[in-house]
Length: 475
Image (cartoon, rainbow, N blue to C red; front, side, top):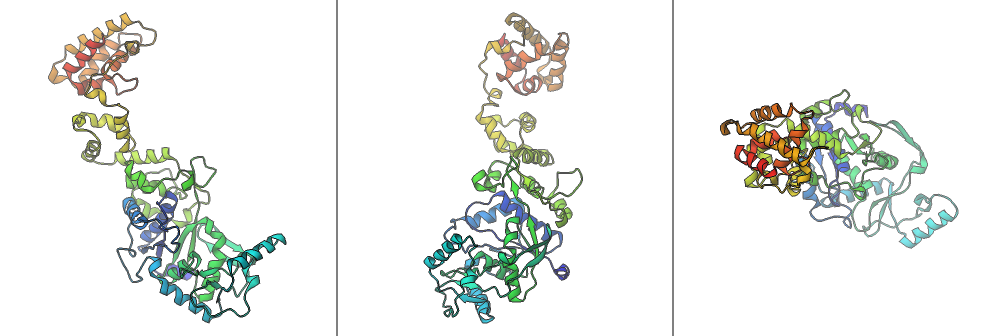
């Protein structure tokens, strides 16, 4: 394996088109992509669609869209092509058959003549004897010629302990109990995952295989196949799982793992999602957490992939997303906000108010649906009791509102800007034991909301006439 370090780095991402792409799948692909890009190598997208019963229509396009959105490209793959086309496994059946015939010729594969009923009976017998069921204990002495209508099984010639080095987990090993005669090609002519991905990795000169740590237990099978072909195995990179927000269980579709493209619909930035996924199970060191794509490529190191699973938390994602949003040009921020606003709310003065309160663009839709911005275009209906600050009274509140009105009336309408409004109102509020005696009723009178932007910002957007009109209505 050390010799492969001098070769051009080739990695691959090989998802199955069995539904939506969730974060765990994408993170595995991202690590492979980062390693290829860091080493100026080749990244391959390959579609593993040999399980036709589970295939979901439209999934291949969905996979490509998710990768494109997050900012990942590929040197070889569907639509791009390359020297190893096609890159969809169901279009490579003749290749798997030829590799199967090579194994037959070398005595490492045979046709499986048994019925499911026979296999089931042997399994039950092993269970009754409290022994593991091993197909190799029932190898046919004279297997029929393989004609493609029955399964083709691998024949493990060397039942032995395998040892290997994983880039993340170091030296690993497994005993002979991990080896058995597994199916290479099913009776329907489609290869199994265990066979097809190895044939493709050999054909495509893959040097580094990134996969979830759940595949560690299957590695002896893979190594026995490489041995049968006389091929040096690639470097295995077994990534830790992504844990759910509670931390005790691997994140999965059944546990609320969302389609990656749902995050796109919710208004997350692709660079924030890439940043977030990269930090799930990989730690570059230091205090910095906000990285650009270019920085991630530069810093990515297999030695810094962690053993423990990263915890998927929406709060962290929201924080990272907001940090990336802050880096955007002001004009771009405005255009993104305006894209969510009806025309009557597309006021530049609202941009800073909205931006301060969101962590993703989709939050604007939530604000609109909750009516949080209605008061800028519609005079709010007031609950007079909510105007009263703490232990004050209705009479005192009215007096305080009149003081605020008097202070604001002295401002020229052309100078009715936030700084001047704040100065005018604070000059009154500072004469009270608590500024809230003035600021609370003014804020509520202008917005009609328990929580809203500060009254100086609201008044500057409403203008002098509308501000004083609402305050007079509240008196």
